[in-house]
View 1 (tube, rainbow, N blue to C red):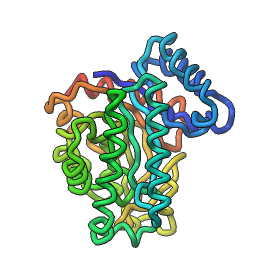
View 2: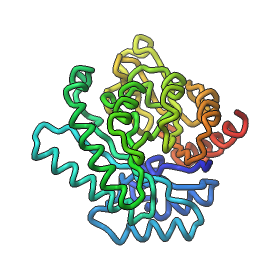
View 3: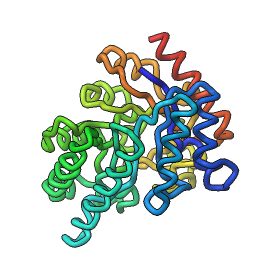
View 4: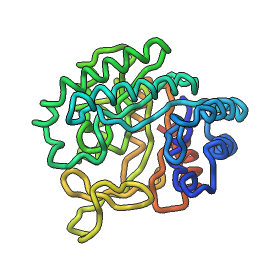
Length: 298
């Protein structure tokens, strides 16, 4: 097992130009990270292929792995033309993952900003065959490189342990599994400990995060639906409130979730995601250190 950091945790510095992705990799290695997960926010790999090689070589120089390449995607657009175009685009991202040297790649299945009233089970059932076909085609394409593609419990549509497990089982590819985010089950109001226990055997990658949770009645006027980064309160599917926290300082029982993951025999990468209000350097460093301590304790 190796604990490292998602580059998303440092996105505020990357977006502001205070830190490049190469400097982020240097920082992660110098502060105890054993791997970096590449999330292309604040930098462009599609139109800057030389940066792909620079990232791969920088990680090698620092002595840490590149664990995973994680991208946004929407595989259930409205038109058939858009559907085929998005599958082709994600296949192009698989080529980037291969050039990075990773063996894991997460792609979303639906847009995080999908209207909430279209995230119901009836819409899910209608879209399900197209989800399965798209994920199969992408996984089959990735197989030529020995890459395992994954879906994450992410957003409000393809989230919740039952929906994600159903998708993985229907895709039925040995190189398709789950990026298990221990916190994101709360976005659809499923207790994190329950979601982790149900889905852990499908995990190929783990995201470790923490949230503060509040009833909206206690904090009237707070929270929008989509802004989850930089310490913003945001609403869950059922209207409760979440805000990112430093690992071990929020309301999630990370000890129970990590114990479940450890007892399952999982021995892969654990990537810390920091989305809190605090300084991202401090939040990321404390998060990696605390994650290691909890793993050792459970």
